[in-house]
Amino acid sequence: MTTSKLSTTIDSELIEQIRDRVGPRGVSAFVNQALAERLQKARVLDFLAELERDQGSASAAEEKAAAAELSNVFRVS
Image (cartoon, rainbow, N blue to C red; front, side, top):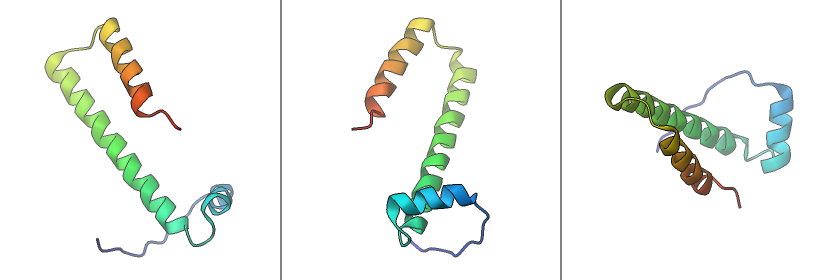
């Protein structure tokens, strides 16, 4: 994968928290991963909106079952 340099403005408190977590040399990788995860979330939300347009809204039981599955998938160990 190729990379590109980017200049951006980020809240100082966030930068400090990132550096505390990953060290000063891990900031780029951390930000890159965060952006990738945010884009993936946007794609999933777009897909779910399209699915709802095509298939209609999920029932309460379906939403509850999906929430239970998602809590298993995204459980932090």
